[in-house]
Amino acid sequence: MPHRPQKIVVNKEEKVMTIVWDDGHESRYPFRLLRERCPCAECREEPQDPPEGMLVLRLAPRDELDSVELVGSYAIQFFWSDGHHHGIYSWDLLRRLCPCPTCSREQRRS
Image: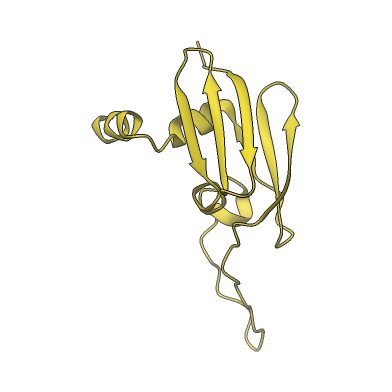
C-alpha cells in the first residue's frame, strides 16, 4: 500500500519541504532537488532541434518557491518564481525521491 503524508511543512527560509509519512519516516526535500526532478513533460522531454533560424533559450530552473497546492488526495503541485508550475508530484514519486541516506541506499539496490 502506498505511503501517505501525515504532515507537510514548507520552510521558504531554509528552502526545504519536510514530509512526515504515515509510517513515521521523515523526508526533507531541498527545493533545488524538487525543482530539478520536476516530473512534467516539459522538464522530462529530450530537447528537440529547433526549426532553422529559431533561437531557443533555456533558462536554468530557479529554486525560489512561490506557493504549494494539494492536488486532490494524491499529490502536490509547486508554483515556482520562474513561472513554472506544471509538475504534479504524487505521494509515490515524493517517497521515491526521498534523499535521506536510508532511502538512497534502497534506491541504489533496486
